Amino acid sequence: MVDEVDRAQAREQELRDDALRDVRRKTAEANHGAERCQECDSRIPPARRKAVPGVKLCVECQGLVEKKKKGWYADSN
Image 1 (cartoon, rainbow, N blue to C red):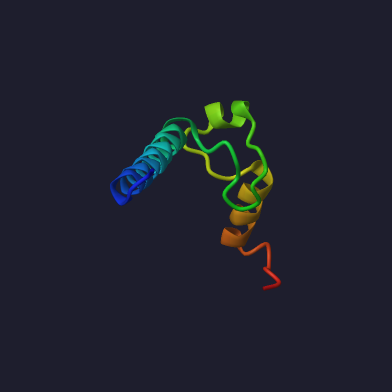
Image 2 (image 1 turned 135 degrees about the horizontal axis):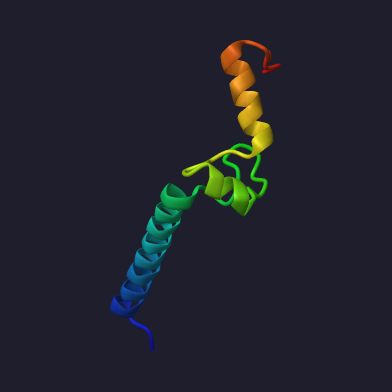
């Protein structure tokens, strides 16, 4: 029979595993860029991640960001 201590230990291990997974993902993103775009969740090709260290956006979303900065694009929201 599983008691409260066993359940608490199992939950603690789940939380620890989740935290380690997050740290590994963030470390990989910092070193090689994100695998998925933070805006649209599309896959960022390995060549782009290699060419632009720490990349977080796909080419399309990065283009929109740059156009907004230059005032070439008016967001409809």
